[in-house]
Length: 82
Image (cartoon, rainbow, N blue to C red; front, top):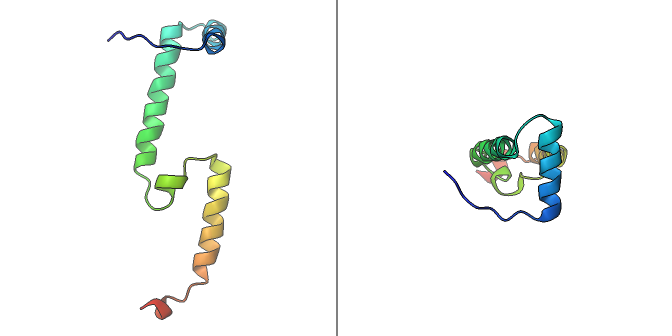
């Protein structure tokens, strides 16, 4: 399928340079980047809990938050909640 995209000039220059440096066409590079992004979104949509909403940040920050939550929830006495 063909489509038209509006890409800012500076970004286009960067993409063109990256494609040239890697020996690919702009078309191939853009398709690769879009394909990877779609795969990432699909993987994230399978996430549950807080990560499904807030877990899209940098992985090291997401892991730090998860570690904090794990620590806090380990202190909860489940018998008190039943």
